[in-house]
Amino acid sequence: MAAPRLEFRNVTKRFANPRQGSVVVAVEGVSLAIADGEVVSLIGPSGCGKSTLLNMGSGLDPASSGEVFVDGVLVTKPNRQVAFMLQKDLLLPWRTIVENVELGQEIQGLPRRERRQTALDLLAKCRLPDFAEHYPHQLSGGMRQRAALARTLAVDPSVLLMDEPFSALDAQTKMVLQQDLGRTLAETGKTALFITHDLVEAVALSDRILVMSHRPGRIIEEIVVEIGERANPMKRRQDPAVANYVVRLMNLLQIEQAAA
Ligand SMILES: Nc1ncnc2c1ncn2[C@@H]1O[C@H](COP(=O)(O)OP(=O)(O)OP(=O)(O)O)[C@@H](O)[C@H]1O
Ligand SMILES: [Mg+2]
Image (cartoon, rainbow, N blue to C red; front, side, top):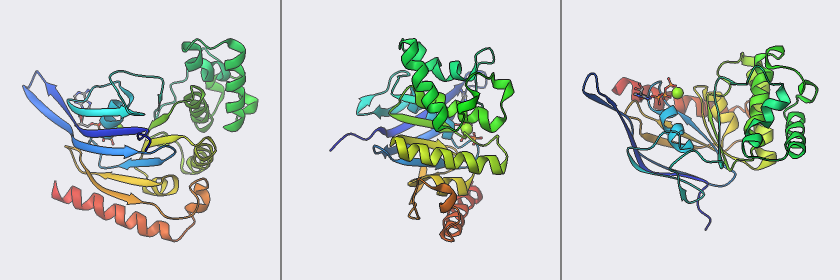
């Protein structure tokens, strides 16, 4: 059987605070595996270690103990199989949109014509074909986040890690971008792990939802989403079964909060 695209084995992360002589255990004993083409969301109370977990997945921050694997290879540093997308689009203001989308490929040393073509194709897929030559400040927040998604996909990663990619957007723009992301992930067959505080978003976009406890973050529940097509989040969110999932998630989160 093929190795999971992304795997955490008994991962713990501690942060030392030398000034106070204290140690914070941010993540404790997390094991998870995400198969090729799966989309998994991670939810849990603020400060429970979600971003810490994603940072370890990207190789930006090492685990204190345990291991992280991408395609069966131990992650020890940032690598090109994994792409990161954050709440802030982090587009470079002095580059046009298409130049921003090309950035990762440029770093990889791909020839200009090839990377331009990929970038333009992705901008079309992310419904920004007419904005390639604009600068980031000329785009709305939702459009900038779409450009950031195009940039994330441009390096053709095995795994997309997304840390609250839509949380800074208004509710309606967010729904449109969820639809774009759902469709794009399905079309490209990409594997993704994303963090969200939006329970309906988690249900609409993912195959599975992992629920974390209060810090030190552990995975307390895994919920498999079995409604409609994942490629069509807009349709999924109209399914009456969404409410049952949300109630279940709310209960899990409140139980953990009350127990803290
Ligand atoms: N570089 C760091 N140094 C010290 N402590 C850190 C560091 N990064 C995170 N922490 C601590 O680890 C814990 C988990 O933080 P993390 O950012 O992973 O939470 P989170 O679940 O992403 O929260 P939120 O939902 O608010 O984004 C917090 O207590 C935080 O203060
Ligand atoms: Mg976070």
